[in-house]
Image (tube, rainbow, N blue to C red; front, side, top):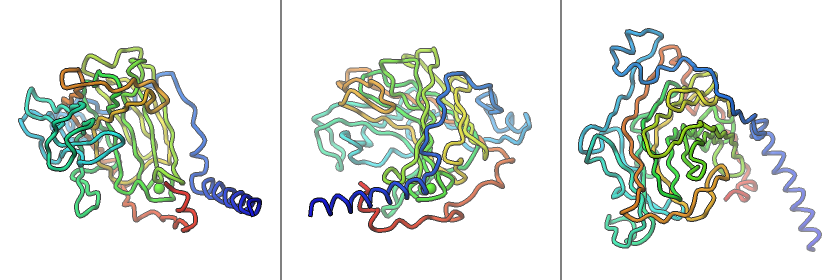
Length: 334
Ligand SMILES: [Ca+2]
C-alpha cells in the first residue's frame, strides 16, 4: 500500500513539475546576476520637477504624480496599507504618520498598548502606504499605471529586522499563464541588507506566489551606505524592459517575466522580521526596536511620469489568456 502511494505521488510530482515547466518556462531559470553598472537609460528622473518642464523638455514625458507629502494628512490617492497580520507583524494605520516636516513616516515598534479598533494591543506593528484599497474584499487601485518612470526619495529605517520596500503590484498578479505580462510584482528597491549597508535588492514575482510562481532577483553593490541619509530609488518601465536606478545611476536592467503590460499600483512598506535572515538570504538582524529606537522609514516624495510612446502598449489583464489550474494541482498550493 505504501509503495503504491509512493508510486502515485512520484507520478503526480512528475506532472506537477511538467506543469510548472510549461507554465513558468524559462523564467524559472535565474538570469545572470550583474554587478556592473548599466549605462544611464533615458529616464526623466527628477530633472523635470514640474509638468511644464517635463513637457518643455520633449521626448514624450509627462507627470502623472508629483507628491511631496507637504501637508499634515496623507494625501489621496495614497492610503495606509490595509490593517492586518502580515507575517508575524501587524500592519496598522497607527504606524503611518504624515503630520510633520513634509514627509510620511512609517513607524515600526513592539507595543503592548496599541489601540486602533482592528489590531490587538500587543505585538510588532508597522505599516506602509499604497495606492489601492480593499473594496468589498477586492483589491482596487486608487492610482495605477503601466510603463513610465517611478521615483521615491526615502530615508531607510535603520533598526535591525526591518525591511523597507518600494514596489509596484498588479491586482491581477495571481493570474496563471502569460508569465508576468498580465501583472508582475516589481520591487523598485528592497532594503534587506542592514549588515551589508551598500547593497540594494530588486526582484520580480509573477503568476501568484505558490505552485506556478515565477521570480527573478538581483542584488547591486552601490558602494555607498544606503542608511543614515536620503536616497532616491527609481524604475524605468518600458514595453521592452525594466531599468532600476539608485541615486540617479542605473544599476540593473531586466525583461524578466516578459514585462508587465497592465496598470499596477504603488506601495511603500515596512516589514518586520524576528528571524535573522530576510529576503535575498541576507542577514537582516532580529527586530528589537521600541518607540525610542531609530525605526522610522521616511518618504519625502514619490514622482511618476508617463511617456506618450508607451500608451499604445498598455493592456488589461483580460487581454491575456488565463490558464485554468486543474483542481488536483491547487491541492499542492499553500
Ligand atoms: Ca500571469
